[in-house]
Image 1 (cartoon, rainbow, N blue to C red):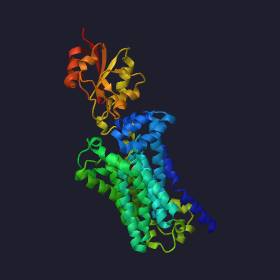
Image 2: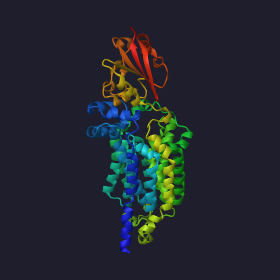
Image 3: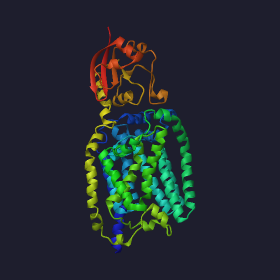
Image 4: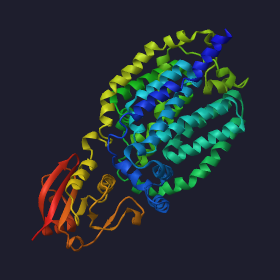
Length: 520
């Protein structure tokens, strides 16, 4: 019996391995194929600046993403700025999030539920999407699950070492994604529930003492980001009730798979009962808090809530696992007498699990694995699409690489480039700069992004004077149209129409390139 028990415990402790490997394989598959889209171009622009320029950037715009930019600044210096290199930290972080999701599911709901939760998380199109995104969402998912896992550990055995680990994870969560701090509302509710049931008034005090240093560290970042909100999120529309219904499809990157995930999570919450308290609150409270806040302040963006998906997966794992199973090592992680706290933070062990054979334990998973495979199959079209383009919506992507290739194939010494629009979030100039080793002179720029300490450049007030003496201009315009010069308004458009004729026009998805030659 002892040998069987050790075998079961060994398998249980390795529950994180299959989800981690599956997520890593999916995340690395064609990771560099899709060209960086506009958000990733912002990451590249920030990360490749000298450190002083990067710090000045965060004082002007995008402070909330500043810690991630600093991380990527060091990463790029070591590994380069190819699309694969830029995205690799996200792939590693998302694989870690999948492994920790399985561990959290095991601690709360049993080994089968943990394994299935991690595997379901691994096959979601959204998991691959943000594993292949040079943005901080995968890191936020990793730290969200890690902080929750460390909270469970601290509730089971509240030592100062465990609370310190939890505090560090909360700080890391805030540094990667400030909105993910809404997760603390769920943590607070679970701590209060444990205090009430166990009549332990020290729990809330310990939790507050752990969280306060993290919040103190994050306060300057919060204040700076708050001052930049109107500029940073000027493109976001106020939230509507319909946005809640669209959220599962947004974070899962597939409406069908997102609906399946929500249905399984709801069933799992009913099946798990009290043990669903922690993952349920970690899923619902951040969504509700962000939505309510977005009714007043424009900040509703589905990808900002990607960090809640692991908790939906944990609940779905409970549904897939069927009857609750025990974790044979869970009893060792609980303090005697902390029954209510353990009920809020994890499941109890039973002797029957220790006596079960390993083959029987894993054979019982086969039916549920079929559902996981079904979810993976339903998401295959979206998996294929996201590896073609990262732009959203996918019908309105911008082919920066295609435009750059046209210019690279035909440019001559002395050529200039003009882009429109210069403001906004398309970043046509950054896209060209990323894909062109030798870019024509951006003739209208008088202050570039580094000089301005933001993501945009300033153009000269008298375009005709700045264009004087230029013989050929590569005009790059957002959108597709037969007459790109006509799409340029104001003095810039007047100067181009008066001084140049259109020689040739190329159209690529979301962008038009024209070669202009000087009149006379």
